[in-house]
Image 1: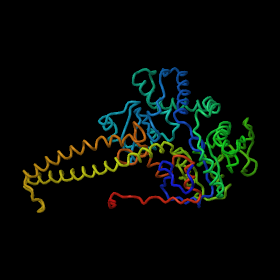
Image 2: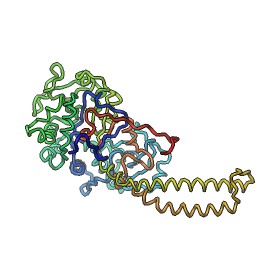
Image 3: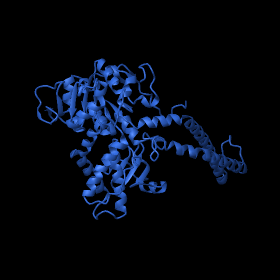
Image 4: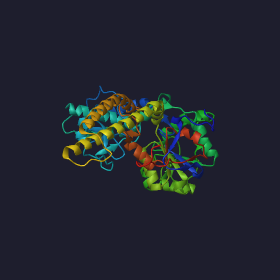
Length: 479
């Protein structure tokens, strides 16, 4: 484990959108799933896929032969339930990549479909894949679109209905508890343990910060999962993890937890016996439901003094920041491999940028020569600095085209490689073409900081100061 004075490797850094002084944070709250408890994504989502698949079979859908493909889609993509498509959009909402079902659309087909369309997430046509839990759901949705197009599904179904159907089956798989029971019975198959997690939380706690958990999972699931992840590092005593936290809230029903004023209920035991809240919130009690306003009152803190850490772009960071004005941190586990890949690509990225600058200069000169020839053709006056005759301009254009084609031969393989960093199909989660992705824009707007795992705060420390980079503008001087 790195010492506190070591600089973390790039993929383990905490990245800052809005300046954050950890000394001003008095309480830190955490989601559980994919935040404090990190799953092996392929293992967890494969079982989720299987459970939903069985429910679809029970409803008579011919999906027995389908298989889960974890790399088919990614967090941050967007379902177009009107057309049965999955798209990647940039920060302005313009589509840069698209698939119909599981088939990637060629550029011409994509452009024809979306050249006049802007992705507006407030429109129920679009479903943003907010979390890694979306991978199994989106995979099945894409495969069902394929089956519908092949006329292998019952008449009357459409792309929107398919999305609702998959969502209903996914909710049933969670509610009926069979999936979570499987995880509880063999957590070693599904959970990635992190030895730096407890030291990171202890640093925060010893610095005087209150720690709390607010998860949508039920107590009967939260207790064994938290024990599996934490107790081994805390002497092995069952339930020792609870000593780390000043407040534990299950079935919080986020995002409503941040928006409404639902009451707290006390969970009395592992069998699920409950009673109404007795007096004020207390450290030793497990609570179900409740609301963020009451948590804030309990700690007697201003919203800006609370940092909430979660993995769900909307339910964890968007709503908590917009409504409660809490500070927020998004856990983006896939960022780890993406940052590693981008750093390994650094030398080639510099080469690509240099080639693109050369290409831009050639393109600019070609454009000016075309204007010069146009002026000669129409008898318009030409700038005195331009002394080329029409024949000389034509000859220069030919040489520039040759040079430009040679540059393209070097640029194309590098741009193709850059487009596959982080994900073999959809590329970097935070980029869309040459721009920020819609996911990056959501994170930029609502997450003060983002990182690949909670334990990365061990490098920031409770006294760390993260300063956001100065925002760049197109007219800034090149550095």
